[in-house]
Length: 131
Image 1 (cartoon, rainbow, N blue to C red):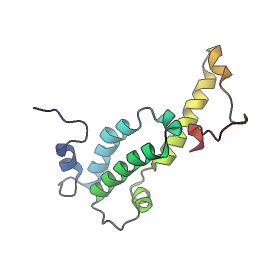
Image 2: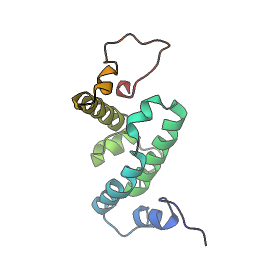
Image 3: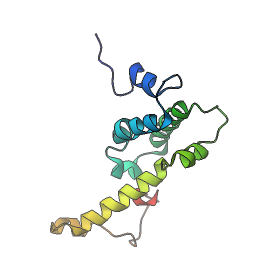
């Protein structure tokens, strides 16, 4: 018997289109079960390539469309706005800024050598706070 990951069929049945739960309860399940999975290590997402971030973003959009039983032509930004859920870009930016400010508060002297935002960057490198 194979044990499924976090996105098994039973999870999709609970928050899917035919679920008897209210939208509020589905959103609560999304925020408490699914959001911590994709936000794990989010401080480093700015260094990830765009295609890897796009995969997670598509998965998030599909789950939110299933929760509200939206048609295929409904804009994803409208779903985020109506549900009050921040987009992935907003979450990445907020968490990375929060992470950088915490790094400079720490008493470890090695952390103070990390460059600040106004440092010249070479080779068009992105930082997570840029997203």
